[in-house]
Amino acid sequence: MDPSPDRFLLSGASGMLGAPLRHGLGARGSTVLQLLRRPPDSPNQFQWNPRSTPELPNSEAFENLTAAIHLSGADLAAHRWSPAYKREIEESRVASTRALASSLAKLASPPQALLVASAVGIYGDRGDELLDETTPPGRGFLADICRRWEEAAKPAAEAGIRVIHLRFGAVLDPHKGALARFLPLFRFGLGAKLGSGRQYMSWISLTDAVAAVIFLLNKPEAAGAYNFTSPNPVTNAQFTRLLAAQLHRPVFFTIPVFAARLAFGEMADQALLASTRAYPARLAADGYQFEHPSLVHALPAMLSPTLHLQR
Image (cartoon, rainbow, N blue to C red; front, top):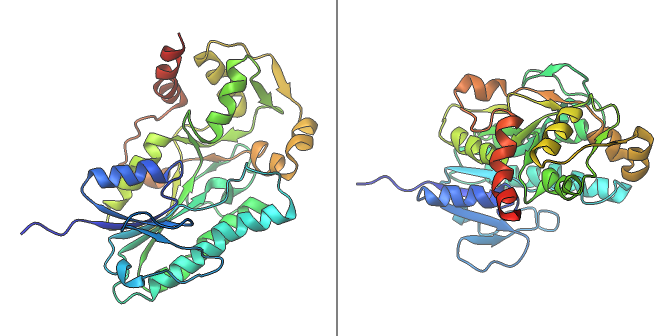
């Protein structure tokens, strides 16, 4: 008799990472149950608002899961960081993770694993320091949020569920996220270095981000924090130069620090100007092979089809 197909619970299933992950798991024959804010339109979808109703709906549907994957979280760059939006950033990460972990822990047959999105922002602004998963958290709003985000999964760990923290760098894709925001400016020759340009940017291609999640789902011993970054972080100046070269555009401009702070407020120092040089030590030790190990490999793979269509 064939073994039962894997069953996964996924939040953020329509997001930048969630959508291709859902398709990737489905292509393997797995069943993917989705947690949504909106009313469901299929039997495998469940409406859940952790702010108003922390307990999972129809909890019997979530018994005997292979794993739960929690990817929800407010977009850091969607709004200026007002006190109200900082609370939204916190609640969408910390409170939702705590609610999900607590609900899963109460199941009669809880999932084997819980994978929770986190970020390399946990390390804070660390200059040229090479950061692996053993590096202690840094300081600042993002570092504090990430630390509490990871701690919020504790109820699941206490119930014997393996918890994996996915510490994402900037996930690069030409259609969504940071790269998609930069592309229009660079295509018009308006790309610019931020400040000194010496700050490190830890990144990972969307292709590798999805593949690495599936890689860890296939490793029953995996637990704890994993840096989801390429093995070759770049400085802002390097990123700017490589992206402009790939688009065959010049780079003439530098955005001064004061201008970045004026335009973006606290987010400028916490995210855009902060230097985070993360290395995926645990993925490397576990044998994950990056499809895009460097930006020189990643940008042509992501942008060449787009450039071809424009010609």
